[in-house]
Length: 428
Image 1 (cartoon, rainbow, N blue to C red):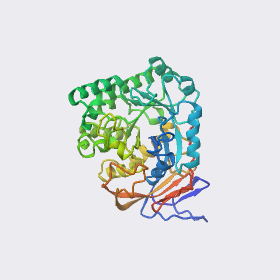
Image 2: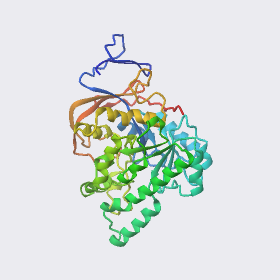
Image 3: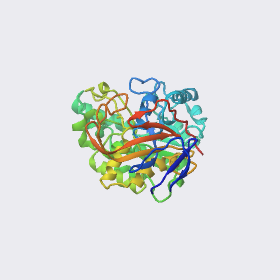
Image 4: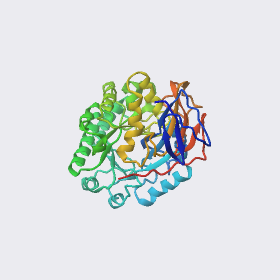
């Protein structure tokens, strides 16, 4: 529809038609799309402890430049957020420096069950469990602990699902074949389809046994699609799934061109897997789109040793660009992009009054100019690490303004660093 949008006191007051009232500021958005702010349910902003890669403030700036107004950040920092004190320290850092709205996952380990279970579900987005993918001391492979977490967690449980034994077996085979010079193209063979399916199947089985609210992150294989239902509304699902923009964009052939720049966990896999993910998103087997934004320095990524080159790529600035490219190609509608990047994360996580351009909602708004053509270059990249796997690619359409909780956070290519996002709340 065409019409006006009236924002007052950090909220959307009126929507549609011609709104003739006195205002402090008017933004002319004729010819543009006005969208709800994107909610990214999986990012790694690296603070504390890894601030040579990124900070909460630096990546929040990149987020708003790409239309993401709310992020949920993972606990595998240094130290990992495995107790209430460390978790609240991250909230304090964000309150002081994040231009975007924020929430942080509590981390799970084999020995922090009591801390995990006393997390407040109205103020924390979820409990992150690394099931079979070791990250520091956060691998949860104790069967009793895993069962207790699924049985008792008051929070949504978000899982990274790759089977550690399968990965280790495949890595040993690669070492036997290549020695120390394992090519990155072996990454989807080492972190294989079988490893993903085995771990995801275990998570689903545990959730069904205990009626757990489970959300499986970054699905990367066609084989996992059948684990998820699409015959009930999202609000009624107890088990949901996420797909990430890089798994919708790249396939295993791209390792030859981009190498470690697209090395991530779970791995980008063969084309038939990539091709299956978008239809599964469109038919509601998958519920939300995210980035798994995970920056590493260019030097770290350039390491030749397969096991030393870290997995992860920076994406939070460019998620809407990638999805709008699919829209322009006729592969997804604008409405479905908004549903999967804005509405569905709000429903999935039961976020208080965000994700929609409805009266009474928080004023998280993106103005997107579909006419602007631009190229990803070093001077347009806002990630602290300064690189992107999309460098050199041209897009049609670009975020022009981003409004965060009623504040103009991004406009005319500039981030207003005086703006502060809010800690999001949940209605669980």
